[in-house]
Amino acid sequence: MQPPHSLWWSQIDATSPRHSLRGDVDVDVAIVGGGYTGLWTARELMRRDSHLRVAVLEARVCGFGASGRNGGWVSALFPASATTVIHEFGLDAYTRQRLLLQDAVTSLGQAARSDSIDCDFAHGGTLSFARSEVQEVRGRHYVTSAAEHGVGPEDLRWIEGDDLKVHGSVNDARGAAYSPHCARIQPARLARGLADAVESHGAQIFEDTTVTRIIPGLASRRPQVLTAHGTLRADYVVRATEGFTPTIARQRRSVVPLYSLMIATEPLPDAWWQDYGFGRFPTFNDERHLLIYGQRTADNRLAFGGRGSPYHFGSTVEPRYDNNHAVFAQLTYSLRELFPTLHADVTHQWGGPLAMARNKFPSVTVDHDSGLAAAGGYTGDGVTLSYVCANALADLIVAPDEETPFSSMPFVQTPPRHWEIEPLRWLGINAGIALATYADHHERRHHSESRTSALLARLMGS
Image (tube, rainbow, N blue to C red):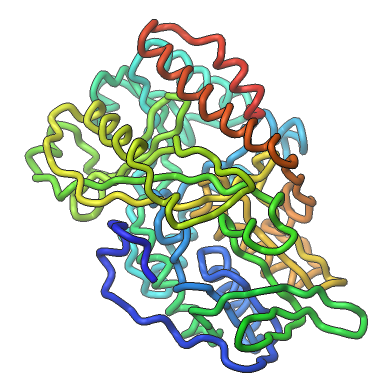
């Protein structure tokens, strides 16, 4: 039941699945998916109305998917660029969204502490290193552009020299864009702790329960969730299935499952860390095109991940895609390039699917007529966004006529765009991965930006 070889799950005591659904159950809100979105939604619903009958259904165990496998970044990042958000919704809406996401980093940590969830939360910010002249130009431009949109140096600034060393450094670092709005966590501990908290708040959790169909409500019938061993009837059914959404009937084009893979080293001695820093546990990446991400764990390992796995035709999701030895090898090479004195063994390799929306905007929708609701499409920024979107779902369900900071976010109640039919999305997504790989290779070899960078930016909508 546990994701194989994951560092995060290896640090959790083995647990047996909670009992599965047996027979028919009647509740107020049924939630399909026991990851962050589903669990935060259950928690926030119960906090708003403790009398609600809430049930969570999970096909494996809570946290089995991306919630228990991710890079552990509680960040204020948003998948779509600031320029895109401003173009779609205006500067005021962008600013409200940005400030809410920044505040959510802190409030998520406070929520975990209030429910006695020990998830190694360390609010150390995040560093995006520039390791070449081309990357430095790109990083400085990012900071300058953000300032033009009202982002002050207290929220994002360029650091270098001694200021950089205070936070942490990597090989050949010329500087970094630094934001304080990020925390590091142990993601599986957060997911499992949330599941326990949800039950303590009074909700039911049914694990090892595969949903076969979700039926919308009608004037004469409440929505239903069908499983092999029982039916769950509710006033609202929330779909919170993220990277596994394409496995649900009629949802194959809602999001695409992209695979992100990770590695982790054995614990590193304090003497080794003194050379690189990271004493405040900031997360880190660099300004390459093909995304990487890392953190110093609570037990002094390096946990490091990145993209590069291909998109699989037809939005298929299979356990064998969790492992890609070529990508694991490239991650190991990249990690040792960032930290040349790293001679420790890589002890864990794992991966899993995340969900990317067509326009890179997450979605939160509640249809009060059919009783169907959904949230997702976080494109890898789901630790914080799931918390924010769950609050929006809870507000829309419990108090649909009241506007709140969460329910008034610009992307809430905005229908998501569907992806193109195959083979168009297979060609487009894998072309994007290939372009990013080529652009990075060109920059390393020629020390100049590739013309494919502009094409990649247009393709990715940034």
